[in-house]
Image (cartoon, rainbow, N blue to C red):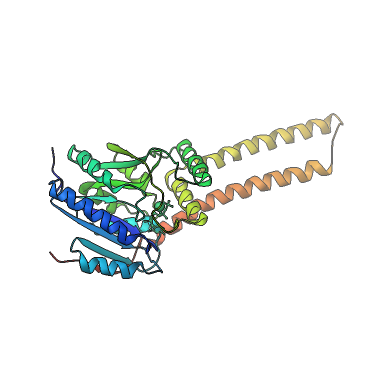
Length: 316
Ligand code: UDP
Ligand code: MG
């Protein structure tokens, strides 16, 4: 059985001034307890300030000054949760890292179970929610629809797993070496390692504050998930294209026949309607293709996933 020495707890924070202090206290008491019981020899709590515009940084500065186990990464602007997590994973020093939300909706008590699975040899341990009771009807409905859709499209994903997970050092290094910009981490880790364990938990309501995911953010996240991992939409376009051609061919043959037999049916509908139908299909196809081209554009530019304004670290 392998032993866990150091562990990094990565906590992304975007305008979390209401919760961050409570989170730090609860996290610290859990980590100290694990440390006392020799489940880990050392730990760090790494906060990633994802361009917060409220008082989050002030509180993080205070936490950093008071606690030698804390570290803070300050990003230059809001890079989104996936960018913040990537920053955390790049800077984490531990032999394993756990990513967890700042609002403690995922219970940090489960970290102990994750560590024991790490000791059993798993490099990837996924936190999986038992149900979606704490979500609004809208979120539950859209999330379930989205996961079903991307599964049909062939994206490998574990239902109800968010971003609460443990990754071992070797896997973190593999992850950090990936070059792609469009990040949908919960699918990316599964594409790196199919030997994983799961830990089930009940997701709690948010401690304080409100969700940091606007509808726009959720939509762009879902699109990334589909288009970064599946080429099925492109194939569907090709199939629709082929079907349209067949349809057009039948139409031509039919008109020719009716012309020959003298039953021609010339009319407004038969000219204008197909024009609408086909231009609609063409536009739809172009739209899907341009989604991919847009992503290629982002990849080619090779923009940084995150920029660090400063790093606060205790030199031990
Ligand atoms: N978050 C972030 N950058 C963002 C949006 C969110 O770092 O642009 C963080 C946020 O501070 C929290 C986590 O991501 O720690 C999850 O966000 P939230 O709780 O708002 O999401 P929900 O639980 O509503 O899905
Ligand atoms: Mg939350």
